[in-house]
Length: 272
Image: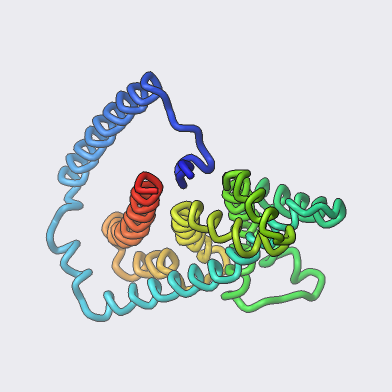
């Protein structure tokens, strides 16, 4: 099977497309470097690079404070992923079902939560539901919206992966006497999951970034802890740069894992 995880959701660009992407990438890098240079010049001119404004972030109590926020971020992200990804798979299977009612209900769920910003869902749990006497702890006011929105987006990832499995696999499963359900469970789904695994890791990156909406419900995730630290140190630029670096490092590691998995799958496909 020649399909790869990259091809599940996107068509591979041709020679002109690759040249255009390369040119845009180079221009983007140059523009970003110019912006960074300008920002550093402004920071230096305004005294924002003064070592005294940065050394405070090496204090044990400040590091522990940010560490609590990082733990809160990782906790909500992990729990949301553990629930949302299997739910997304079930929604994908439901949408592909031959039962029209089940397929329609799954499609409505997916399209609704794909089309609505997660911030509105968070506000629904924070403001709308309490008006009807339905309340949740702050932790769940963040986690449940993350699950609802992520389940819809990952459902489409799983559906694309299932559709990307070669049709011959379905026919081979039927030829050996497997029912449609058994073929899906034993033959199609394992291949589909392998195809979309890098995309799921990138979805985990999205969940990690979505966790920053915890500030709306005053949940102690990393972004909220950074906001509190600004009120303590009065160093807005420095605090948010430190917080941003933490997010960038985590997202970089997750992205590298996704790329490594994609490369491994391509190597297996080429060897096969």
